Image (tube, rainbow, N blue to C red; front, side, top):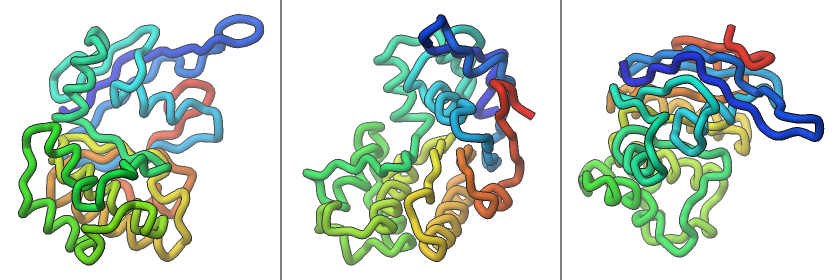
Length: 218
């Protein structure tokens, strides 16, 4: 089991007191599994993703990644886990503007101490980036930047990939192409994939679907 979440709870401060966002979430994923997380805007999908990725801490409950309980970890320990076990693909790409495409792709794998130049080059080739490795992110289209973000994530060989609306900023044709490539590469690497999405097309491509409503999964 690469992911095991039990009774996860999270609230945020509101004008009249704390507002519950997650009200006891249970979720598990096996290695190589794909899952779409859907729900209306403001339902807590991104909050759940950030908690699983160790970017925030829950009020109660437990998160285990690859057998490690992250809920009691400090910031440094969670950051180390993000380098070695889990990687996040953000909707806004979050590429480093001062680094070339090739350096961006290698960045996370280098931090994890598992950079394989041949693997990174093959990812760039599969994602159609080989001709752009010496360019900087600002010279690329949105679709190309999303491909760089995917390549950067998979170059580190994570056990779990978290993707927050990974095709939300792309046109329909580009989104379909990026999704095809991402699914093929995730299948090849054996990583589990959890995708937050509003897209019915994207959700239908996942093996499982979980719907978040009023702080609970259905």
